[in-house]
Length: 418
Picture 1 (cartoon, rainbow, N blue to C red):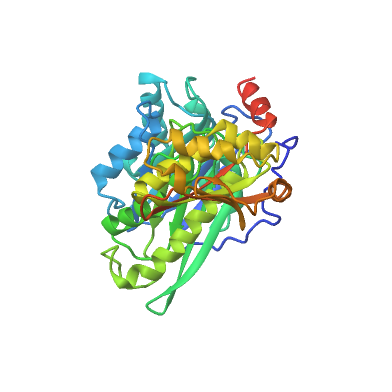
Picture 2 (cartoon, helix red, strand yellow; picture 1 turned 60 degrees about the vertical axis):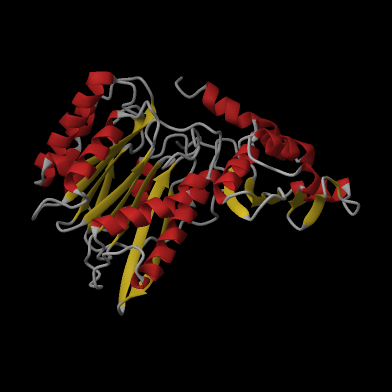
């Protein structure tokens, strides 16, 4: 992807990601679709680990999603006795809308990884990302498994993150540490996503690992709740993928007292650190939105409920008219009024307040006397923007993140399969 135009919103430096005890990774080239780059990632997670997952609610879920949901429910989120968990991910082909052939590919890959990793087939989690509707050439993945297994390393985070990219312009990684019971706990993860991004349980592919000791039920609760205000609070283009998957694995090798209740006070520090990592990864997806030039925070207050505020915020964030106005650096606040009105949620027109950053744009259902169009236009030239809307009917609030919609988005998606 040497000719890829890096997003102008990309981080200016690549983060250092700490190893997680009990986790090793490798990346390689299976040439599933791409040549001249890595396109497959393998992770080994030590015996005794817990795993949790959130997945797309799409009615056209890909074969790997259905497989993961099935084995997660069957296992209760635990590795088989004395055996590791594995995660295998390919880019270039989503193995979605592939019918029985897709199921056969998933089973074949699971069997091959299990043989290579000396584990059970039902301990092999899978994800695929790329073109929909084409059969996965799984033999290509099987052919590189020995090399991947031989190359497993605790330090291969950046290679693993790069291997799962499709239209992404940069690999996305984040990490954090936290003290639990006098032990330093590490959380490290990576994600991919650029287009076909809209919240619906998970919103892309994401893999997060920790050496904390956490029971599966508690881990699942933490992941589900953390995803709600991170991966479920972003949108690039309002389209939900068939393949959305986020997995969180905990090896238990940090030595902390095992967390068995997600609501226990002993879990608070870990949950805060996990939320930070998940939000960082989610924001990086928005910063790499296809063709994006603006990173935009949409905050809604004064709604009937938090859920209503989320719906209004997404109505604003997903509006093509709002997004193109941002792209053109046009402070067209009337389009925000439109988006609030179309959301279907209650709003008091005559109490509506809108702000661009610290600039009061509208209040009491009318343009603010202090507002100057030149101030709004100057604000829109920034790369990072914040819009706040109070709809005046209650105490509900929500924040989502999005990007602008540029001509580059059309170029990328018009040429995606060519």
